[in-house]
Length: 130
Image (cartoon, rainbow, N blue to C red; front, side, top):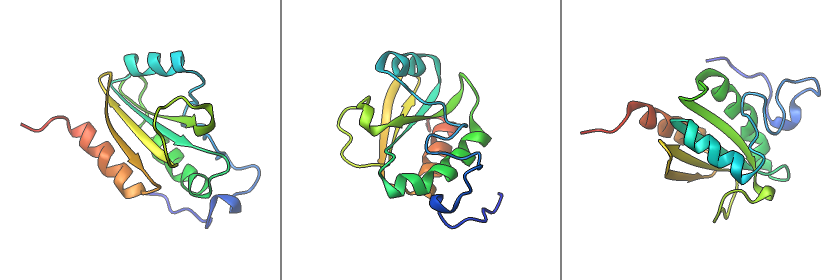
């Protein structure tokens, strides 16, 4: 894993490839767009965050790096969703991550816990246990 040399999102240079939504995480712009993603992506993870949220800004570069490593269109994708667009119901705190597997919502994670995010992704990639 690549070590990051900055301490927080605010320390990033203006020319950084990272921004709030992050290039590796395609931005969801509407409910019909989100529904299409859910129907056409085996594992869809939606990063729900807000520009005014410090933990959201802090975790954005880390999620972007993770997305750049795992995103495979149609198979697994991490998408960015702005909390203020109200595309997801019942989001009470940000950042939050909604996990969809084969068209069904299976989990919501609240908080900026990167280790939990990685564990959840690994669990989904492992498939059902039987």
